[in-house]
Image (tube, rainbow, N blue to C red; front, side, top):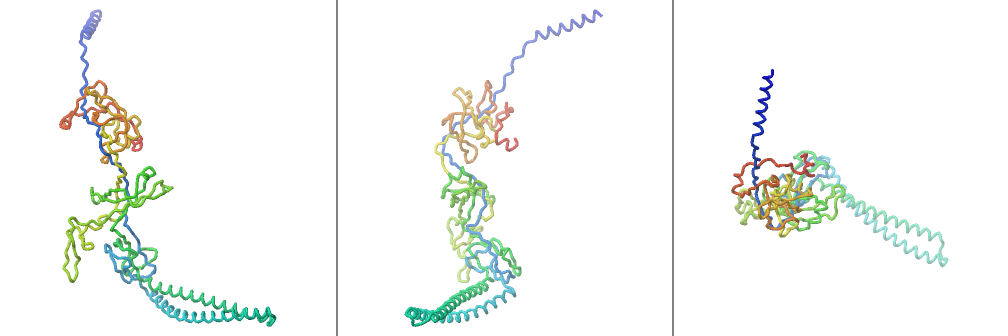
Length: 451
């Protein structure tokens, strides 16, 4: 038993001596972080406002038939160009023909009655004037005592009767004239004409179907110019002026930009949405460059065709109506150019991983400036507008032109850690970065997106 305890004590002493004699390990040095350095740039910054809206024709109407009968003939189809007043359709039915015949007969009778009423009116006017003269004469005799009161009253009654006949004849003439107008309107209601010039966008009814005042026959749009209506908030409304340039893109044409101008700015805001409508006009006929003439086919002259994808429009080859009503337009308005604005990459902002809108919500925005000895220094700043390509941000205070700052890797830096500056050529060869020391500051934007 004693030998066992002595063995245990010997082993413990040996372990303690070995542990005490062990040399302390040298503190492991942290690896350097790789950063990219840029400069504060001074340049002109365009201030842009972006909206979306629906493209509409300059004038866009739906054409209805006022006579509820069957369609006898159609004279226009989808895609055809029509002029104002051009025949579109004729509505006819048995009841319509009977109504027209009855209206024509009534019209002939009305003209005859109108002539008789005019004769009656002339006779009534003469009778009234004669009775008035006789009444004036008898009143003079009555004052002198030559005639009695009964004779004066009798003649006055004749005068009042003649006046009533004149009024009745005038009312009959007005009624007959209205009947003539109604008969003519009933005769013309069977013919449907275009109220504007434009292109037939849709035809809703087929030959032989029933026309109704509740359902349209055609949709017609004047598309030589199109318009987009955008809704602008109170803050942005004061920046927009009539004549401002607008750039429009649609999904159908990719990055192609159509140019337009602000045509109308509402003077008041909608009380429900607190926005004001602004209208933008866009040309929708684009001549081919270089300019090329053409002629449509005719019996006298051979046709001079246009290239594929263009059309002959008013004797010129053009790209006709590329923008269609109903397309969704992305509108960019240039409202101001800020001269000599100080700009830095948006990636240079400390603790900002959620973009420009999130950065606007932060109260302590900062960057890391590079001193002459390449030691980073934290610098508080304020930001303004975002660049059109969303890669740069305006600095309104805290920096000066040509100052050097870290534009990538600044969120991995902490005091005491060595840094190595990369140029564009060596950037791809840098080792992978370690995860950031702390997560980015939560912003109002991150709360909305659930991050």
